[in-house]
Amino acid sequence: MKTPSHRPRRTRDRGETLTPTTRFQPKRFKQILVPIDFSRSSLKAIPYALAIARQFGANVHLLHVVDTTQLPAPTLLTLPLVPQAEWNKRLMSRLMAVALKYRTDGIVSALNPRAGSAFQEVCAAAGKLNADLIVIATHGYTGYKRMLLGSTAERVVQHASCPVLVVRLHAAHWNGSHTPRSRTGFRLTKILAPIDFSECSQLAFDYAAQLARDFEATLKLIHVINPQAYPFGDEHLALDAAQLTREAADAAQKRMRAMARKSNVRYCTSVVQGSPAAEICHAANDDVDLIVISTHGRTDLGHLLIGSVAEHVVRYAHCPVLVIPSRTISKSRKKRRQT
Image (tube, rainbow, N blue to C red; front, top):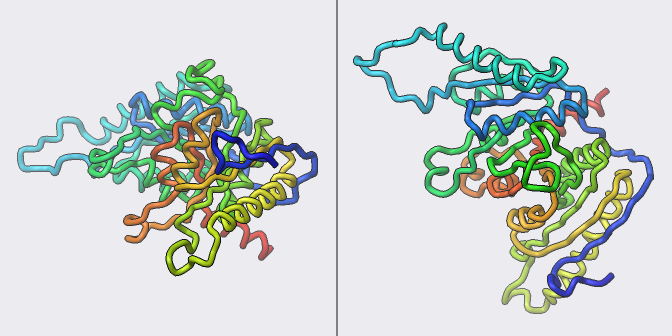
């Protein structure tokens, strides 16, 4: 196998197989929740939800949350200019107008507005709806502003019990170009699935393979070798770092090819070195329409300090990212074993 000369740390393998898959079958998308705040970026999530809904015959539900955590504290001078019931009526009217604009075969509806913490209300609405997927747009804040305001999309990713598709403001395509074919004319042609061979990443692989079959897309598998994870240093001088890296790359290629051969899709594989989040985003820059990645779902202080590869990808990738919460899929597998 020859290695491209311009990026000597990458190796690739391409192939196609027609062997029926025997892996875990992900839950099909039937109920899709789309939170919107009527901004341009939030409305961008609707066409993606519709594209998935048409493929799976799913229902799309629009939701607006009045984020009370962002409202100024009431004072003695604060007057209730508009009663809450009237305010909810106006919001519902706006939601219905948006639903009517995008309605296709009656699959788009509006849910009653909610008030509270935005991410908590979105997750609660998804649970009540028994949603299979949340499609949410992110404003793409970075740096100091993101640190102050946070990101509703990122918090939904952390806490949702179902898969979350995150669409960035500048991600205006699913057809390999920077201009949408039409308001709902998106296509899914290449899917990127990062693989680290953990149970979590294999669950994300199952979803990616299923979507590749449903949309007749190419599945691109990538494994990132993080040099910081290897015992390189003065105390390990007897080890040959280059040899260890080559052996790890060869082993990763074999394992990815074995997984791909069972998936019944067109596929290609890639092994790279570097920071996992950065390399995943780099691999998606060219012609990838969707990244499918899993998250461990940590929400404690350690998570806040360290973060996660999935959330870094959600924050910086230039294409939509489908995040699979591994804790929920693991529960589903456990239930299946018990039955």
